[in-house]
Length: 350
Image (cartoon, rainbow, N blue to C red):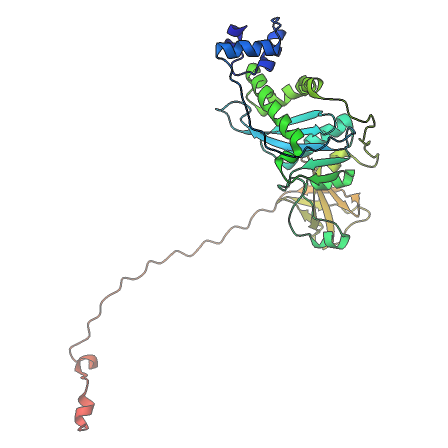
């Protein structure tokens, strides 16, 4: 067993190494394996001084509070680029769900929350940090002031439509559930990725969807204090593909076109009601990159038109080289040579 740990499971903790050895038919208690590894010099005890903090009681219901955060780590080894693991953890049970992405982007957060809702339904509240992930410190727009709404990030708008409360944490220790879950993934997922030879984000997501998160939940999740589930079903009037989208306001031009990210969309004549020029419409960009244009809450029919060709710039006039400066010498009888200072004064006798 020690030889196997040195060959294949180098760097694995005793608990995880005991699980991997059990899969190969070598069954040993993790504490026994820990003593063997320490005696053989393959493992050292890690002692950490714990800082004094007040304990926060877990929520009592599943779905009452779900923590979400991103973990930037070298998931594919030190030689590969750093990527981000988006992770959601239920506060009452410790149930987790993860998604690998290149960066901690709005799209990655929306896709993970969408998967959670597909699996468990809509949670009551999300617990996140204050680094402009779901909230923002910008000034409210005129539309938000008129509606009496607080300024929200693009990620916070889908939560408002779904009725999800956003709770912000003031320190990483406040959302300790998801931070400890990051540690579990950084320990186990990194080693599992190495064993399977995975080096891409797509491969890591296939591993996560193939039962890796479910095995972690079966091992670490716990029963909630109360049996009532606080998750809510998605209302029939809502479509998640439209909820998890990016919405921005645009102005209709005089030719009934709308420009959105340097693309032109022609609003068709048969739309009823049809917006007038200079009126506002909402352009919705879905996660599959499809576009919807809404006016008074109704979808408009449109066609994407080709961009007009840029005007050919007129040929610039050839740049004339500066003429060489010629030094002109005045003639011997030039007034400049014949003028003498003080002559007038001498002629006047002064």
